[in-house]
Image (cartoon, rainbow, N blue to C red; front, side, top):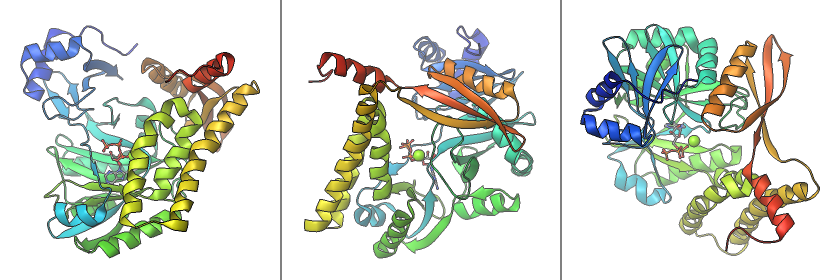
Length: 390
Ligand code: ATP
Ligand code: MG
């Protein structure tokens, strides 16, 4: 068990000092489990499960002997729905248009000569830590050592199909890839140009720089989005060249509708939480692009099919007595690594079972199944004929 249910007084003191909070406030946060304490490979740390006093969700305090280290949560990025309005209003002069990759956010830190991979929620993920160590360990270590490991954090997206969190296929990294999108120095992000130079120097990859535009070049921006949409890529994050204002994100219609299609397989879970936000994005896109007649009908059909096809397939499968679950693969060097991940997921309350392990190119590839509540709820609806909602 790696939870620490009753943190020692010195741990609470350390968090109070690191975050500049009153000791009573820290105790309160800990009692309500907003602040949680864990241990990984003998390293003790605390994490914030939601924003507290300007520290974003996923903020971590690592405890050492006589020292501590604060790793701020990755800040939330506001979303544009009308780029023609948002770009000129929000930015100052030039804009950097970077690719937004669809995976999961991982902050990498070097502590006492070891790399740790922290997910958005503030957990050190054993699987991600080991994969990143294995694939990029030396490069990340030399990068962080050169910059100064005490006050630098690398942030990037893990993409590809073999991970427990977000699976989306990228030809440049079909299974597992790490693409840096920020380097933080003392909590502040470096300008994208400086970041890219550091990343390239050490043979690592960064997200693609798509263009440097004038903030009023809405046509140029739209051309980029059209191309990404055709290629089935997620979208962009737009940054100020000097990071003087916060970035903004924008996703393609392909992704908005694709998310709905993907989420509606498990419509009582992801489907439900995805629907409205994605529809909102498409309403304003349709407005901005003046969609009417045939083109509007085409969008409506696409959206409708993204809602009904996957959900009906799920209902029909369950009605036929088939099991419905989410299946995915992960890769590991040893059996222990697989067990370590299963234990980690179980501790986070994720219901995952191991369906099989095979060998491939000197690695182990495990198939995992995540049980879905949608299956339970649909079975009940089929039995009773009654909706759980109004
Ligand atoms: P939030 O809305 O809080 O930012 P979210 O989990 O809903 O978070 P997304 O909609 O995926 O996130 O958008 C933000 C995330 O995009 C970042 O946290 C990061 O993981 C990811 N990302 C991918 N590419 C980039 C990039 N080039 N620059 C910054 N973030 C990127
Ligand atoms: Mg994302």
